[in-house]
Image (cartoon, rainbow, N blue to C red; front, side, top):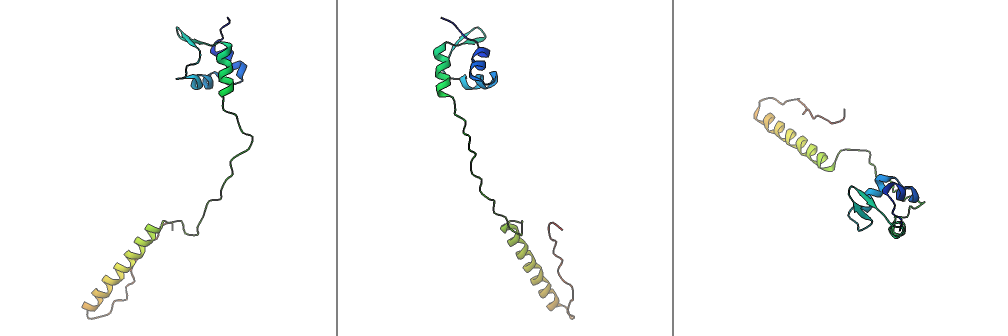
Length: 112
């Protein structure tokens, strides 16, 4: 009976040694002897039969939805609420004063 090392099996299967180490980790394949793992021909065939088959096709990509305004709807709602609150406060303040204020509320816009 002939035993194969990790390098031998990786070479036969045309994969890297690191990929093979990750694949057999935790699986009952091969026998650990000291610090080495040795494989039989049956182990190599089992790995070969269970290896993931690479697909030549690529997954279909879906187009991302984009909008003209990048801010979140929550942020937009908060901005509207802030503007309403400021204008309401200014109206109440101007009613209490003897003269009408011509001050416009300053609203900070993001991205400018």
